[in-house]
Length: 149
View 1 (cartoon, rainbow, N blue to C red):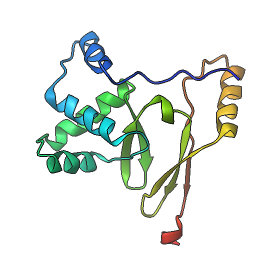
View 2 (cartoon, one colour; view 1 turned 45 degrees about the vertical axis):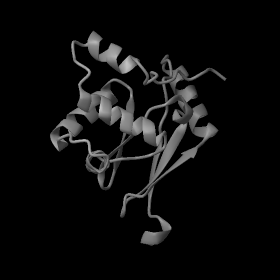
View 3 (cartoon, one colour; view 1 turned 90 degrees about the vertical axis):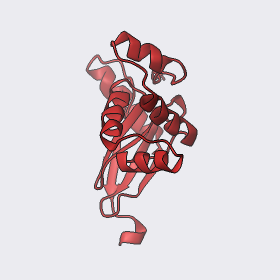
View 4 (cartoon, helix red, strand yellow; view 1 turned 45 degrees about the horizontal axis):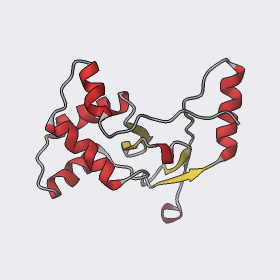
């Protein structure tokens, strides 16, 4: 099976990527990415969740800065964005979780990760059929969780 390329490593490449785009590595940007790195892959946070987590760690970052930084980190490939019924959720884009998909409850927003070779194979087949190089595939399945039934 053809391989799927991975997202950038978060280590020193944030500074390098920002520098290439003429942007600075601000303390706020570093704090937000470090928060996601400390939580690891598979954790889904809203901008408000990020704000609360940083406040709990005695780190002050305005909510407006968090929104801007989350968009920037998604654009750069460090985070992935997931649309839920409760708004956008963000998670670390790391090589270990590149092949995972999401089940999202449309009532409460509960999000569960799952892996599926069938989905990955469908993405590979579709991309090959149109002459694309597959970078990643993501499926979001919407439903109603057991607690909301």
